Image (cartoon, rainbow, N blue to C red; front, side, top):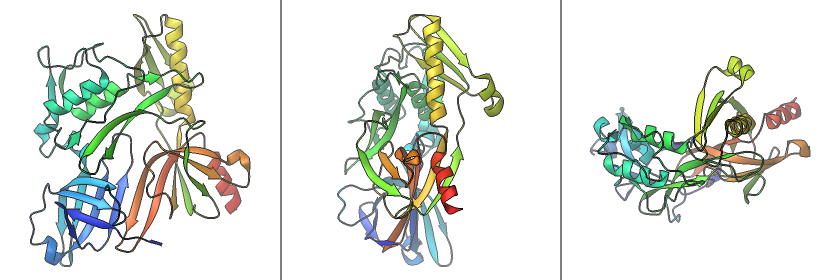
Length: 350
């Protein structure tokens, strides 16, 4: 393991921890930090809902994780603490009632862009003290939430997912790209940011891995694919259903908006392209390494092998870090296309 100098702070005060683990899967899921404190510290403190920050190295200016204590488990030897980041508040909110928003004809998100609608939903749920939106930006393309107004009592996370699904960028002639949302830390607050899914063919590569130096092990996960895709255009809509995939993966729905489409045929063709884009990302890989701890969701890395057929760029989905006061290891989740990388690693090992 590589030597580091990690820090964990509770309410801004550094604590002496025994060991810990960070896990962030990306994709609008909550990142978690678990760590153990000596019983002499943890057993004497009321830790519920206290702010926790985790720095991988003591000289880092911004934390790798900012969250709030959600669970503690005391044993005879230590206290295990589990903290969730701001996405955790989108479903739990500290109290279940805080994370729910009721939208009706008086209080709603009608007519707002997706970025503005998410800002208002967070404010309505009183979650804007945990998750700031100073850097949120907006989707590409710009989509109004006025179509098919959202009504009812929903969690903020449900609202965010339904709004993001509406915006798919078609500027790339080959495959449509969705917008992604993630949390970045500005050194003081957790900030919500919307950005386009990275393009593997034209994005600056952040890190290079190869199977001889910094890939230790590899696993493959088969994702659920949308098999019934409906695209709403300018007064028209079209649905693409892949019968073979439906039999294999069951009926999974996806609905998006694209006001540039003027006919049923255009909507159906665009839906077929979206299916193809999801098919290319059907497989996710998780590999262990000692490198890449500072990589973030939606950044691009490169895998190099002896056979160029299996080399290429991959998109970071999430990461996990196991650490002690002096060392760490990293698990990275990435995706690209069907599992050529896994096949290559397996053939080399055999």
